[in-house]
Image (cartoon, rainbow, N blue to C red; front, side, top):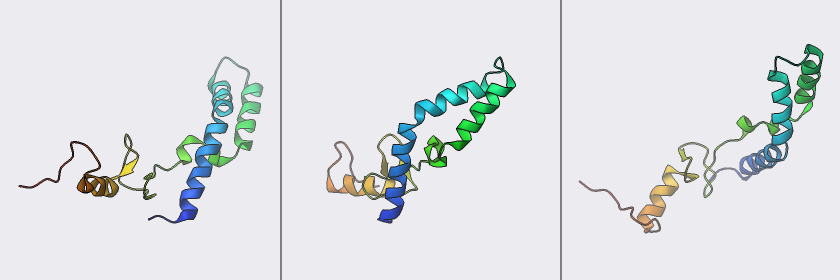
Length: 101
């Protein structure tokens, strides 16, 4: 089980990035548009840099929804490989069986 503080920090980042997603996207669009004057683009860049760092989507860590483990997480399932194996062994995932050869 991961530290509760790390899980809570990641949850705060998720909420912040979701809340400021549209604003960041609009400012980035202005910054990347070469047809707009350099001054306007620079002002947009300054506004973008004043936003909190944790509002960026790439600061969010993929964590297991069950254990909070940061590594070995399947994106589709949002579960770590260890938690997936445990659920499979308990018979909670339909169609998944323990391999044997």
